[in-house]
Amino acid sequence: MKIAILSRDGSLYSCKRLRQAAEQRGHQIDIIDPLSCYMNVNPAAPAIHYRGRKLQHYDAVIPRIGSAITFYGTAVLRQFELLGSYPLNESVAITRARDKLRSLQLLASQGIDLPITGFAHSPDDTGDLIELVGGAPLVVKLVEGTQGIGVVLAETRQAAESVIDAFRGLNAHILVQEYIHEAQGRDIRCLVVGGRVIAAIERQAKPGDFRSNLHRGGTARRVQITSKERATAIKAVAALGLDVAGVDILRADRGPLVMEVNASPGLEGIENTTGLDIAGIMVEYIEQCGRPGFCLKSGG
Image 1 (cartoon, rainbow, N blue to C red):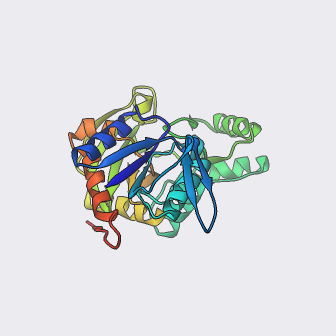
Image 2: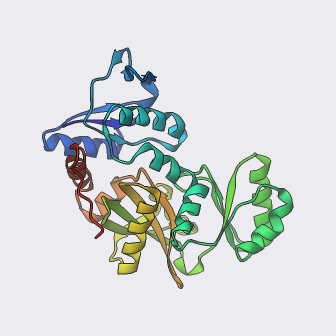
Image 3: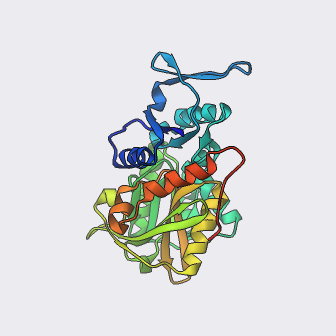
């Protein structure tokens, strides 16, 4: 197969591993910077040009589109879809997942348990917004934030009001969520491919922090997940229409709570922690689904 990886940086661990896994299985693979693509949006002759040349057909595309270029990156991916390339995660599903509020609304509509979440525009609503999620301590999140950036724990009501007002002063869109005490800075990252949880790790925040992201200094270990956690992860990914995703779950007293669904999960932490060939599993899934008229998905 001829496969393209859409990424701005081919030296990143995930891109290198996906390229390695694809080449080991005999595929031709190119890493393409989506910002260097330009498109002919023409019903008679649609095309994608890249650095002065017209791209030939790709059987499949692996989107590794950073959040900062979601708009243009997904536009390029849509053009590949228009030209008949199989996308490992469709453009519309990526845009759903990248919009934190929209994704949470979609998850809630499917009955998937979440931390209590509030969203408001007017500063007059700050007090009631804080009470809506159970008061302080609470978590304030930038809607556009990733990898733990723009996530703040406000331990008192005064701190919560100050953080919310500060973000609003920057014209930022924010979410306010209840703080799950019993999680104690831990969460579960489930990696879902084709309707199956293929790996799971528990991430622990570094001392003095509550964000478990490995990019923020957290640590990870392999973990056995419950049948309910497995079912929750699979249902969350299906609700957003994704084929591959990382689902972050908090273990709360009332059961598993989905914190976020990541449409472009990093492979380094989960591969190094589990020892599994995640990149190879993803390429195998592309082999199954990238052929016209055939796609094997499992609900297991």
